[in-house]
Image (spheres, rainbow, N blue to C red):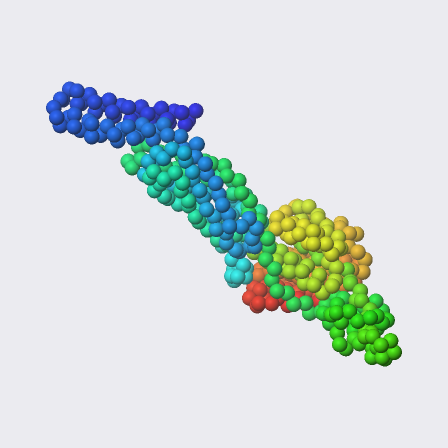
Length: 422
């Protein structure tokens, strides 16, 4: 209704001006009056044509250089405007209506510098371009979305504005163009202070990254390509007249569960939470590289558990979950961790990734450490935000033999983050 009233008002304004000029020429007469009328007549006819020109019939498409990227990267976008009738247009303003999820930037290379200034992260982002199409039927408008934050972002609409030189007639239409961008979390290089593999014959931790235990031979077999020269059993080779190698005992993979604290609390540091997401993703990859099986438990608005499996599909599901997860829920992390303790296999290694040490955390950690083989806590927070209570809690837990890694901006400034497991 409002648009119709606006249209009638603009039409009436142009028609009244034209009638006034015609009346002036009729009553005044003479060459000058009629020359002025016919000279201005094309301008009024253009305004009438522009007023009735339907820009809603345009076809607007969006081309993305990639629909999948990593947090902090950039994507090149090209907006294409296509119209069937080349009505002359002086200018055209195109604006990408960005979702709220893109109203912040993520510079993963410099984020750690602002770990103690999380309020600087939300930055209003506007993408607006002006072009002068003239008689062109196809107009391409390229632009770049820089420093895309983690998550799934839906590009849904483009606003197009045009009008005449004098600003008498303006037209605007919103085109619904749906595209999806998925920004996966980055993986930072993580160095584990000790691998968490053990052998079948005992529980002694292994510092070796090899897939086989080359100290305990369990049998012999014929040589296969890829066997090391040192594995050859020369006595059996001479006896059987063929190359025989020793067969070694496979390492026993120790079950490891990584628990992410995705619970919301007042004053949460979003930059520290994003860093915790990256560390979780990196730890999953690092542990699986060392032939250990890694399960994942996310505790937040919903509790999501991914069991122990060497399945690429499961890893993609974990990555998808870490892409979308946001801090939420009303119950504290300690309470929900106690409720989900039964999902953690008894005797497994447990790694907790959190950004907040609440009052009940110490008691819950003591109970969890009795249920697991080894417990490691990774506490991600800006050094200035670590309270005295949290510092005292860290000292008490360390004195009780619980491993706590405090990751601050100083640790994140290094190329490789070291995580102690012993």
